[in-house]
Length: 386
Image 1: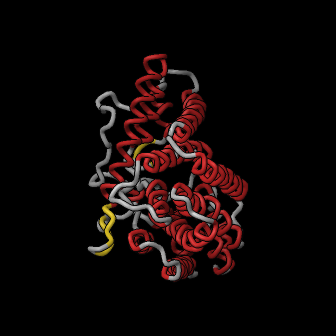
Image 2: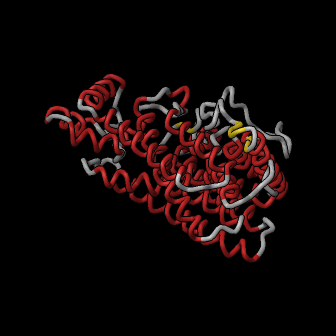
Image 3: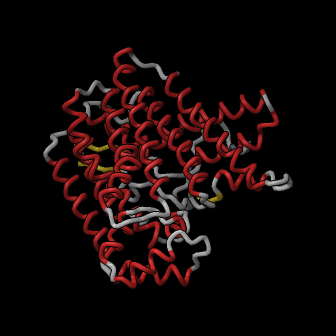
């Protein structure tokens, strides 16, 4: 974290962020009788997040000055502008279970913020596993640390190893913020199992992603299972349920939220698949060649391998996972994905899940504030470009 940044100051500039806030421009949603000011809620979460991280950076630097580069990189990474979708989902889960007021209590904001810190841990390690050079329009953690230690022998390897340690440190911070949050025994008993389940599921999704990368097939169900573990559960379902658990939700409400969350989360990941290949890097913050070079087993590739003619399939299998994949080869792959109808097939899957999420939300009979915010969110996920 840069020393120019003072504790407690929210770090956010959506006008310049390559990963803009998810709900722009319609951030305040609902009717005049039931309105959530989501901008204000996100600012409150970020105040908690930034103050906590600034305190950890300053205290750790005071104890060991040699950690300065690592700590600054970690602090900047956590507080960098982002969608904040997981903490926002946590807050919406709290409202869905009957929470009231313009801003949730401090305990809810702290738990929501701990989810954003955990997400930073997951991103740091994900970039190491994928060998990604960029995240949110800036160098990934291992590239940042390698550049700082460029005078060292094998600086790239040092950067990777240091990034693994950085991710571990961020995971510890996420736990510290969670466990230092005042909660009743009932809340602790309800919340911790959902958090542990979420953490296990993201490991499952990451492992499935690892063992299928470079070996994409036409198995759409495998691609969707990865999407469910890596995104639908981790990004939408469990954060909603964590927030609801803080408000004392029973199992029936958890199941209702599950019904809305899974199609919404799958739609989110399917849109990521398309943006990862066809999106504008200036908005997504990541190059469009990364998924193609890695040969990720996405729904887009599964649909293409099902639909393409033999020549198209041969081109995909020959060029996928090629480290030297260039823009010309990518254009040929894009032509296959478009020509065989794979891109439209994924758009159709997104549309189907969009309808499912809306239908289930309409049947859920949630409080108006939560229902309206979720309805707006579902629409925004469907239309997002970053």
